[in-house]
Image: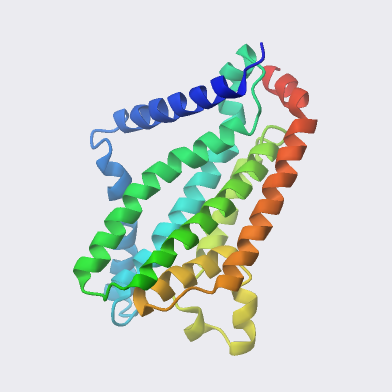
Amino acid sequence: MFISKTHLVEVFFTKLVFNLKSEAAQTYLAYIWWILEPALLVAVFYLVFAVFLVRGGPDFIVFLICGNIPFLWFSKSVNNASRSIIAGHGLINQTAIPKPFFPMLVVFQDAVKQTIVFTCMLVFITSYGLEVSWVWLSLLFIILTQLLLISAAALLVAAITPFLPDFKYLIATAMMALMFGSGIFYSYKDVLLPQHQQLFLMNPIANLIKNYRQVLMENILPDWLALGYICLGSIAIIVLMTWYYRKTDTLYARLIIQ
């Protein structure tokens, strides 16, 4: 059974709302957990580095928030998307549905939750006492850039996992390495030699975190050129993966049904 584009959009948003409600219903704290989880992780990092190790300096809590929350968005979305096609086997058995539907559903589902988290983050930073300026408007472009990067990564990992189910464990390891290599709880300017800093910023997550901090903590406009490169690279991967999914659509259908 084939599905029209109009019906596909309706199914997408119906499942989006249903999945969000279903996820919230699985815990006693429901929607509060979307905010509480990143808040607890920030608290743990603050306790370890600022209290136990006496590191961080002024505004370290804001420094952690600007690093941890964007990283968690990327990490959770990519991890969840990696299993999305396999998890969608029921719908795949019923209709000929484009396979990018499943990782993109995860991406948008997590983006909705992240909107709430980002709102709470900005409220906290404002109440903390940092100066709010028109520069903060540039956050919209940073967030859009990260959304494109997440979409590209989600389409890529979702394409691999049905062929190599153990790939999800490699993703978990890669996310752990990425966490330590993206400057979430340290400033790359303090720990890296000047000649190594540009190499560090070739990591797109590290570059995004740098730009979040630059805008929110220093009221300096982001590095538009770096964000542009990340956008272009992400769009290129999205186009390539969309073409790949079209070429291999029936292959995934047979693989999932088996």
